[in-house]
Image 1 (cartoon, rainbow over the protein chains, first blue to last red):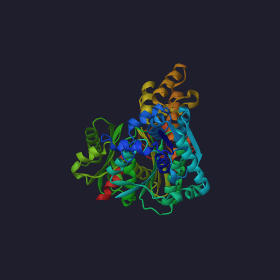
Image 2 (cartoon, helix red, strand yellow; image 1 turned 180 degrees about the horizontal axis):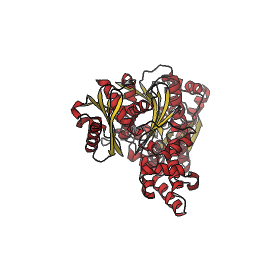
Image 3 (cartoon, each protein chain N blue to C red; image 1 turned 45 degrees about the vertical axis):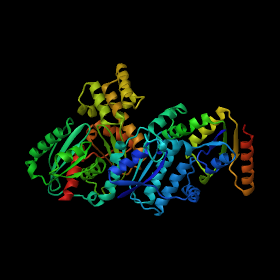
Image 4 (cartoon, rainbow over the protein chains, first blue to last red; image 1 turned 60 degrees about the horizontal axis):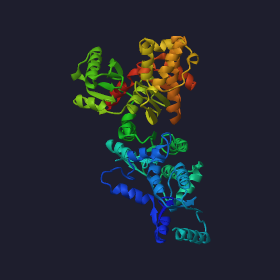
Length: 144
Length: 408
C-alpha cells in the first residue's frame, strides 16, 4: 500500500515503510520526478511557478507562495495515499517541512482524507524509540 | 567575487531561488549560505530570544548568528521571506536589525511572491555589491573637474553639469526615448554651463535607462550605477550632510526608496515598486482628475485638510475612484489634493519605512519633493519636517556627476 510519511522527508520513516513491505510517499520521490524531467530547470528544488499555481487547489491566493509550493508537492501524494504515518515534534535531523503553516495543512489534509493514520510523538528516550518502532511495525503490518 | 549571504524561508518552494541566484550573478556576486549544524539551531534560537514555530525560520536565525559571530565569511546579507507570512515578516525584520547591530554588513530585505523575477532584484543586488566594492568611491564628498550626471528615470530624465563642486548647468524633460531624452537634457545643461560635449571629462549614468546611456555615451561614461547609491550621494551633497546619519526618502515617478546613510554611505535601504499608489504617478493621476498641472498640486494640497476627504484604498485605481466620489460629494479640490498627498506619504511610511530604522534628519528628494503638499504630508506622518535641499529633483544626476569625477 502507499503510505504518506510526515515529515515527508524523513529517511527513517521512509526506510521503515519500505522495510515492512509498503511504498513510502515522500518529498524525495516527488522531487526526484521533477529533477528527472528535463523540461524543468529550477534548481535546487525544481519546484516551478506552475507548481506554486497548482498549489491554489489546496490554499487560496492570500496564502504565502512557500506554503502553496509545498502543498503542490505533498497534496497530490496525500490524495494518492492509502495510509499515513505522522510524527509530531520531530527535531531537524529526523526531517521537517520548514514551515509551520504548511505542516498544519498537511496534517489536516491527511485527516480530511479519512485514511488510516498513525500519529506518534517523536521518541526522546531509547525505550520510547523501541516502542515507536514497534507501533510503526504493528500499524504497517496491519494494513491490508 | 562578492559573497551575499542569503537568510531565507520559502524561496525553494516558491520557484524563486533560481531568480535570486540569477540576479546575484548578473551583478558579479554569489549567493552563499552560512553553515549551521543541526545541533546549533536550538541554541541559536534560544540566544536570539524569538522562537518561531517554522523550522526554516529557526534556520535563518542560526545563520544570522553565524554571521554575527564572524564564523562565516560574507560581504553582504540578503534576507527574504514569503510575502503575506506574518511569522516570517517578524523574523525578517528582527534579523535585519540584529545583523545591523552586530555586523558592518550591508543588508537588504525583500518579501517575494512566486512571480518575482531576477530583474526586480537587480537594483537591490547591484546596490549591495556597490556598497561593498566601491566604498572608497562612495566616500567621495567633493566633485572635481568638469563632469555630467544623467538620470534616466521612469517619469523624467535629468542632466546636471558640475565644475569643481558647483552645479553650473541643469535640465530635465519628461522621459520618452531614453537616448533622445538624455541627449536633449545634456545639451541643454551644457548650453547653460557654457561648455560643449567634448569638454566633459566624465559622465555618470543612473536610473532605469543607465545601461543604454552607458553604451550610447561610452566615450565619456566612467560610471554606470544603480540609483540607490547614486541618489544617496546626490542627496547628501545637495543637503550638505556628508557626515553623520540621515534617512533619505526618494519618492519617484514609478517607485520609492528609503535609504539610511552613515557618513554619506548607504548601509540599509528599501525599495518599493510596482504599486503606483505609493509614487508620483498617483499624484499625476490626481492632478489630471483635478484638471491642474502636477506642479500646482502641492500648493493646493497645503491649503486643504486630508481628513475632510478620506481615502479608503491605497490602490491607485480605487484611490482615484475614492477621489472622484469625494469630489462628487462636493468636497473642495484643496482637501482632495491633500488627501492624495497624505495617501502617498502614508503608504510610503507603512510599506517602506517599517523596513528600516529611520535616522535623523530625514532628507526628502526626487521629483515629488517639489510638491510641497507631499512634503508636508510626509512630515505629518513622520512627526518631523523633512529637509528638502535645493535642486532636490536632480539627486541622481548630481550623484552621477559627483561619483564619476572619482575616476578622473
